[in-house]
Length: 211
View 1 (tube, one colour):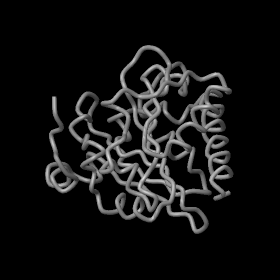
View 2: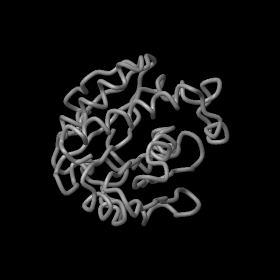
View 3: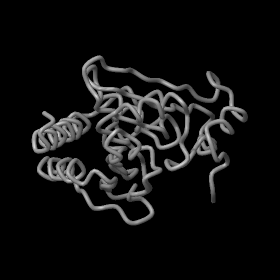
């Protein structure tokens, strides 16, 4: 089934900001690395928290955080190639490196790696694997290789898309409970995961002469 809305303008006309969703962002004075979660909150649960934690106080962060009643948040899904919310686009277009966080279905913990920034993608994947997480290259429908994908809209026209299975995201929250109220209760697995992603990013930047 396709998206209910084909653009952010359509979403904003059909949903109420502050009641159905919110947009959150931070812009760093010192970094051109952006962590995105455009399907955050209850759309692809856990991705807002992952992007927020990965960005920390050092890097840029953006999310569309949906909080409609359970089972209805998927209405706010605008696919990555059509995600044109102005603040997100402006931040993406100013970023040299982008990591876009997503959730995919799956009862087995796995991260599917995609995007056009192959060096950054592979360094993140290797670091995750060393830390004990299962990674795979994403299939064609999830591999984020379209130049229109927001992860590839930065100054270098390439970025990374991480698709984390439901089981992998559930492991990051106490008792596997991904309800909004419980998502503040994170596990050691989340810390390990974010540390691995940051390690991969650092290695990629050094390899590229950017760090």
